[in-house]
Length: 339
Ligand code: KG4
Ligand code: ZN
Image 1 (tube, helix red, strand yellow):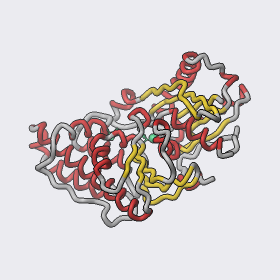
Image 2 (image 1 turned 180 degrees about the vertical axis):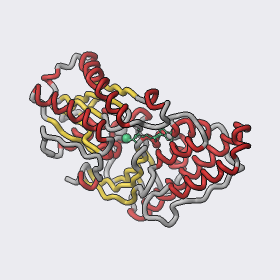
Image 3 (image 1 turned 90 degrees about the horizontal axis):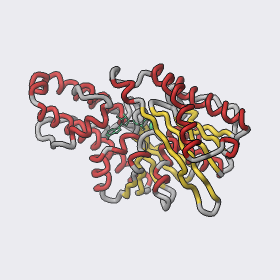
Image 4 (image 1 turned 180 degrees about the horizontal axis):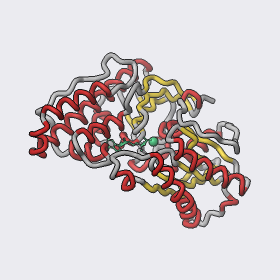
């Protein structure tokens, strides 16, 4: 069967086509991601209205492109999977309305996909022998969650974001240090160029149940204010501050992972979401004793259509009914995806 995946929950317009055969599994036929980074750069963050307009302009073009490239005839698609939530309302609406239109016009079954579940299952895309159970560690721009994944649709949340997500912590710290947008990758690149032997940041999240980066954010803004003049004159000092921030965020993330492994007795941790592209996080996670960590390939860390198609397919194979009448869910906790 042929599956079309559509993802427009934030600032990436992404489309993919998968082929699935019962005896040989799935393979990726086509994938295309169009990032809106340049569009939002001037504003220092994603502007929801601009993001939806860009999806509206871009999505039909990208769908056309992957169909033409692969000579896929629309009528011969067997399933359309579209991100239904969580995400930005306007952005989700563009993807869902487009998918509904395609589904209705050509009579193709439609399935809504939870974006977090997409990230959670994304390590399976290029790691075909990954077994359940594992701890899914989603570290994206909007979510930081550790979820016990016993199977597709069998999830238990172990810890989740109380305030800012890990990606947001990277992005906000980058903006405090005055680094270019997108903050996460530019802070990481600067941090990786040096090591910190100057700044001290608090070890956060030792007590809290969930993930919280607000204390760290306050500490960073105090450091920036106190050292404003030196930071503006000395690029090396700025790099050291970036390294201190990266170390502090990664330390907090790994502390929670170790605790979750101890609590659940599950030692396999699959890291996904935009921040899983961070090299220092990968290195630290791989060094944790008693933890076996998996990361998706870099292009499946950030938002993509393959994970949407893959997740929809997994749910379809588990018997989840298709639904032509999808509504968007700007908030959609993973617990609601239980089968
Ligand atoms: O999963 P994603 O593409 O979108 C959401 O669903 O949120 O994640 C985007 C987030 C952004 O906050 C971005 O700054 C962060 O992932 N990010 C990184 C890196 N690459 C992307 N953060 C730290 N280091 C990176 N290398
Ligand atoms: Zn995402």
